[in-house]
Image 1 (cartoon, one colour):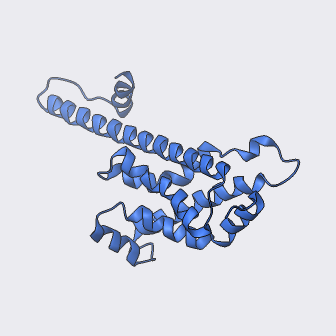
Image 2 (cartoon, rainbow, N blue to C red):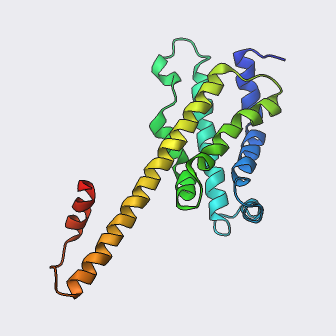
Image 3 (cartoon, rainbow, N blue to C red):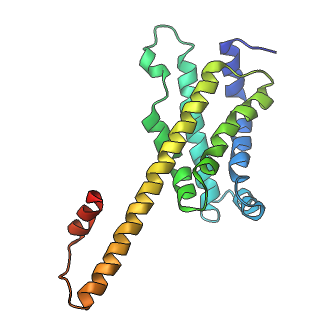
Length: 192
């Protein structure tokens, strides 16, 4: 059964909670089973910070996605507002992706949950997906990958700076070099 674009968007609006809950399940199911059970168990942000951050991040992404889809049904709307703002999507994804970047996820596994959204929506609303919706989910997936790579790059730079700091301290204790400032350490990272 196919719906008009307006009907499709209305179905998405009505099923928001169900879609987000299943998307959250797909995201936490990328963890080992015992970890997934823990992440799903408590809704308290102090008992379960990773689960709560993941859920909040998915809600933020969904709301931004839905907002852009809603704009497509309005007349006289500026075309730029139809596009997903990659920067805002990356900001919404940042908390969940940042957590995954420090864990043992590969890039593909870290962003795999985003692609699950297509199947979840198709299953819940019982129709083929609107091409605009599919394209926007793909854009979100790319934004998730970009954010993951930025986080991994930052982790690498932090590790490199710390390694340089340790080596320099060892040389300093041996009297082979003088003390470097934080700015000198950071600027040496930018040269490499």
